[in-house]
Length: 106
Ligand code: HEC
View 1 (cartoon, rainbow, N blue to C red):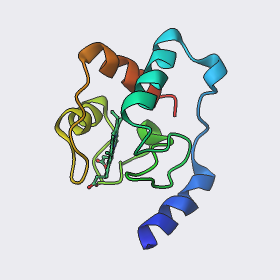
View 2: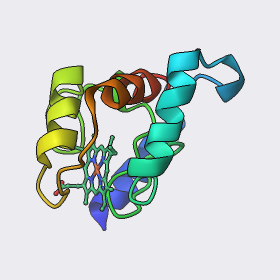
View 3: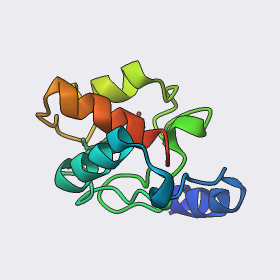
View 4: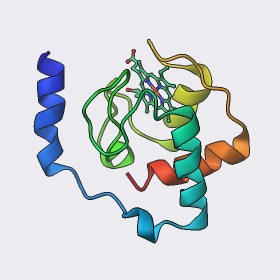
């Protein structure tokens, strides 16, 4: 589990997440979308893996676990079309916008 150890070691230097108490309305809606569609496989508050990698600081890192840059376009593609062992998640465009806003707070 060298990968997991690496991810855990990375925790210390991650930039801070935005506190939920300071969420905009859109970010709060995105948090609910995350709970419905993503939380069973991804932790939002750590990079430690569940079924998929933890997503803390996802958009602030140089690269996602796959090595791809964490741009909105790549994240959108990962969600809608799947990536490796992750199945596509059916989610409408409004929810996806909210979700992306939330992912930027992590
Ligand atoms: C059924 C489990 C499951 C669900 C639900 C799920 N994922 Fe994933 N996700 C995974 C797995 C497994 C991986 C690792 C895929 C791989 O590298 O083979 C992954 C990888 C990712 C990655 C990293 C992609 C990369 O390039 O490294 C992101 C970002 C991601 N998921 C976001 C999401 C978001 C946002 C949602 C909710 C819309 C979601 N996932 C829902 C299982 C899931």
